[in-house]
Amino acid sequence: MSRRCSEAEYLPVSALPSPAMSLGSLGAFRLQTAPPPRSQMRRVQLRALSSVVALGANIICNKIPGLAPRQRALCQSRPDAIIVIGEGAQSGINECQYQFRYGRWNCSALGERTVFGQELRVGSREAAFTYAITAAGVAHAVTAACSQGNLSQCGCDRDKQGYQHREEGWKWGGCSADIKYGVEFSRRFVDAREIKKNARRLMNLHNNEAGRKILQERMKLECKCHGVSGSCTTRTCWITLPKLREIGHLLKERYSEAVQVEPVRASRLRQPSFLRLKGARGYQKPRDTDLVYLERSPNYCEEDAATGSTGTRGRLCNGTSALAGGCGVMCCGRGYDTHHYTRVRQCNCKFHWCCFVKCNTCSEKSEVFTCK
Image (cartoon, rainbow, N blue to C red; front, side):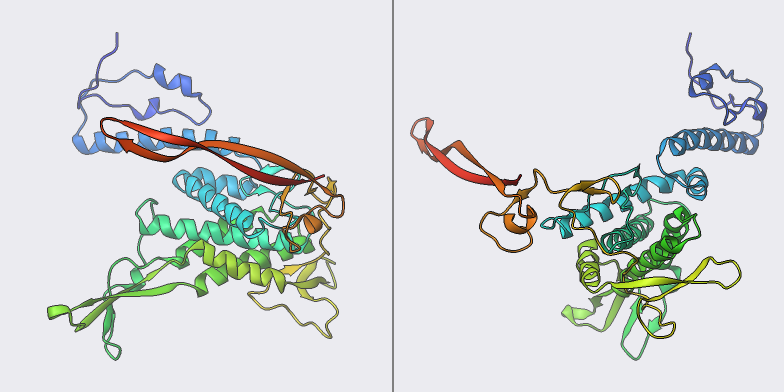
């Protein structure tokens, strides 16, 4: 027979669930009825709650594919953040798909699926963009969640509260986005997947940092005027996040100007220690906001498991355009199929007194082109 718990009932510490226990075993706990002091009862309740949360976090984090050990540990210690991280990674993937919607490569890849999507196996320009936009997406999502109060251990930027810029006539107010926290959290989680000590690791870490740095540089100052009769006697200002679409456009420009690099190896360990511009004299390093790549991009015309290319067969294309989204470029010379569709709908509807609506039937013909 079920019964509701009164204030006097509590979970003893010895009865708390261990991480090894299953969810089904949680229902087997018996409640003690000896009334403890209220403060002790509160501590025990918090311990019970944290144990249940930790148990749920272990189950969730162990089911997420492709997490590195440090990422899994961070997931288990911060279960409230893993949803935000997933949303940030997905927003980065969505932005990638938008920026390359007309290209042969449309931000898709063959390979193991992770929280960051399916990763490209070739260290190409496209891989550089993918890493930069997902790192920026996670930093953006974490910063926004902190400002909205949706994450524990963070909030508004405490460094931007109350301080007055008297010469400019404004002061800090509102809730400034704590971009430093978001960037650092992204660095801890996203960069943790780079385990192998090779040139690709250096490339990925550089592009991750480039995406975050571009996000930091585009933070905006917003202000609101205060005064009598609409005057602007004083202004209250705060820092806000840019739209991720803006970061996507900037990174697309960096993609077009991406630079090829090569590793410089340490003399003793023979492990890559840093990247330099390929073909440059001396040890000229790329700029912090450059996107860098190691290998030339495949043409992405055919499906290729070795490179992760999904090919362009079946892709929609523009039959009248000679640009990137046109069938001539998209279909790689294989030609394209034309599909004719007729859509019938009600149109020119009129209300007649009283009381009915009369419509005409209209048909629309359209053509859709897909690559062979």
